[in-house]
Length: 142
Image (cartoon, rainbow, N blue to C red; front, side):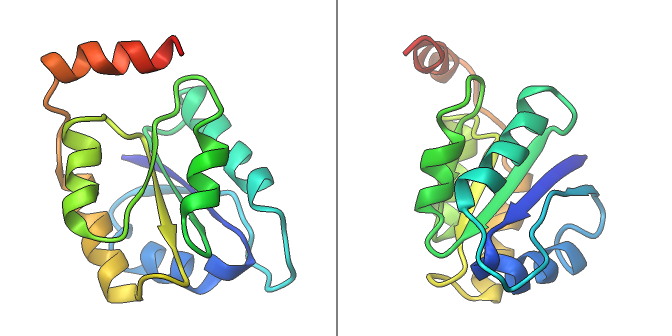
């Protein structure tokens, strides 16, 4: 699967760890940053969201301090359903019920081990469709 990934300066180490470990079997489109100098998370969210919205990658991962800012910024783009998750159960339901196409993680909130579990659960969970598809359609027209 093609995965677009990006982070602000707080998520560089976690992004690298995820690419090396749980994302090793995927084709990665790394959209930055790789530097410790501060960058604005909305700029990174826009890069990753644009790639997903254009169909150039199937899913995306965004990392900032809490994951919340990335989710808010990414969710502004049509066709993006971004979910900030701090544990595997929320990651599972974000896929099952919401067909989330971008997972947002907080590098200051979770450690690498938990992030790996969240990512593994998120990638292994399908969308349930059915009544949830109708609800997704309502989100898209808001």
